[in-house]
Length: 166
Image (tube, rainbow, N blue to C red; front, side, top):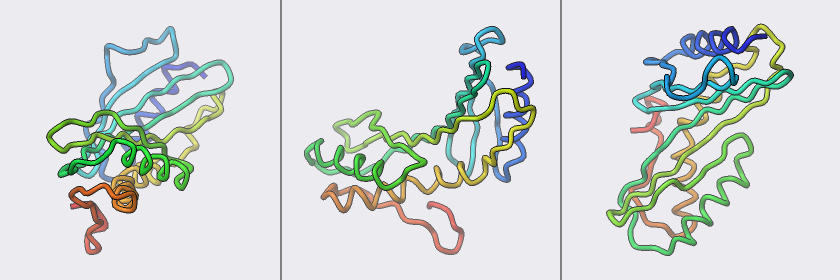
């Protein structure tokens, strides 16, 4: 399948996910020639990005959600790394990476979901809604891991009534 059709299938699939809005392609990255496209969208007040790369036989889709943990008190960076490593060991489908730790008590952690697909398939047969919802819950799970590893921060909890983060 050509990359133009594949990216159109991806965009259509994203737009069908309840709550996804503002789906746009990044005009600066990728072209029809190299099979790589990237873009952004919003979901539940969060900003997500994606990158899609297709070859002759396989296609790779990665969806990323960046979250800033606030109120992180003075702690050793190793404690944050331990929390991230614990998260990555326990959550097979999602990987966390520390993007930035600043002196104002903010730690930016990026959560990424990746999937390999058959590039020759005309349909995007991967349901994106569960992946996006899992990414949405990742900061809550990471907050628990940070707490377990002794990192004091503003804890993230799921609002039981709404099923979403506050």
